[in-house]
Image (tube, one colour):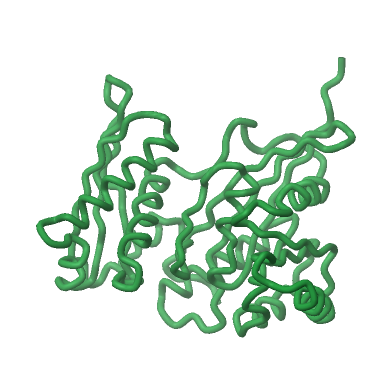
Length: 308
């Protein structure tokens, strides 16, 4: 008996900051692989999520989603430039490019810049209008027409990533668009992200959720130690890097209450994802020039000197 045919390929998910790319990737994969918070610019690395799809003809497809950092129109700081370079590299390497647009915000300066760049893309382009539950139908149709007039898209999808509305249709289309060939990852693997980086991202998400506007954008989380224990649990030690003493005080909170809350929620989240007990220890360190340290960029998969 012959095996069923398979398809596999890479889909770059690009868009302006806070367009909902990470939420969309998590929805397509069916599990959490990328951090989500109300604050823009939360994704700093190209997180690869792996979605499996069964096609109507019996074909099984593996859609490898590259969740790129949000693309800014003007990247001023070194970290921003590195994030933009990572996003475009992900798009250039992909078999398909999916542009995610916040339907409520419409076409802003960042999306304008992305559209201009996408005109040079040789890969098939798909348009994904997100947050459609917040927009009237007439506006959605007008936005679709305007975007397709600027750059031709193979297909347009209207989804609400947060409510998982329209996700299945999009996944089916992406599965049909990737090339025929063997799977690139094991079928039961949801993401291509080292555990140390996954742990750092989980803690960083809780930092965003807990601190909101108080958070210094440049704050970083590094996993310093990962120890698998004989009882099946894991001991994780992490450092949160900030740039000033005042920021450290914000992270710690009165009597250390805030850092304890961040740690407790990150520990719970990571334990659920790993399906094992987690012992998490957080330290806050003032590292005034961490944004100029090449090793921090390598740790999160970014180039210190990105190509322009």
